[in-house]
Amino acid sequence: MVLSIEVSFELKSVTEESILVVPIQRIVKDVSLLSLGCNQNLEIAREVGFAAGMVARSYGFEYVVFGTLDTLDEFDSNPLDRISRSAFITAQVLTYLGEGLFNSGVTPILNGLDKIDPNVVRALINRKVIYPVFVENEAKIDRLRQLGYDAVCVFMDGTASGKLPKNKVDLSVDLSIVENVRRQVLEGAIVVLNRSEKIINVNEPFAKTGVLIFSNEEWLLTLAKQVLDGDRPSTGRTP
Image 1 (cartoon, rainbow, N blue to C red):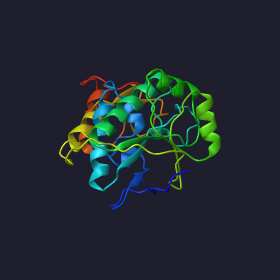
Image 2 (image 1 turned 90 degrees about the horizontal axis):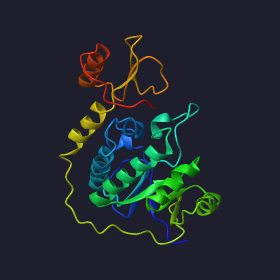
Image 3 (image 1 turned 180 degrees about the horizontal axis):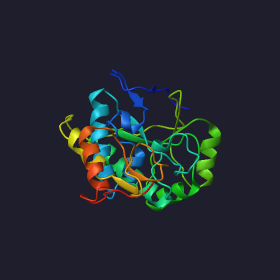
Image 4 (image 1 turned 135 degrees about the horizontal axis):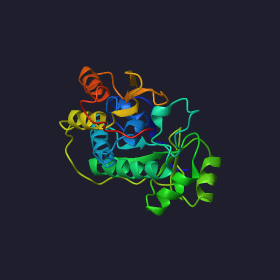
């Protein structure tokens, strides 16, 4: 193990080398992993990663834990923290998110807590996407290595199985893009589930009728109603 780095489970100002571990929707408001997986434009995840990295850096963080190595299913207690039922889409969004985070000047660390879908791991390996991984125990490291994913692993107490890389991208922090990016994501993930009932579901991905959106902001509710009424095309894909 190497010396411990501070791990923060809240978005707060820090003054020393620190790792941020919070759901992405707490960094970029209302932009959950699932909203990215439901987006017609998966590449928007790269811009979200960049925006999230800028926000994290504005608080002093050098490392950001992101994503999930699991896929969505009906039994998920936190479905917003999954990307898709598809391992392919999950890996693609993770790839874009990681690129955006790196380009912003932070070091991305994949979230390997809880369940792992082997197909997601294999899809990342096929893309040659190997980031450090945040894990809860040694058994998780062994499992990842069995799947062929051999990377530095970071534990919840901040210790690591090797030396964490430092990002040398040198950019000034710029938060001016954040609001525009989040609106693009939310507008691009208005999902028609079934027009049999005119219901607007907010963050309810297992609903069966109406439309699904990922924020209750008035401007998005207005767009969702237009989609329900057939005055505007649906923009998102079904979870």
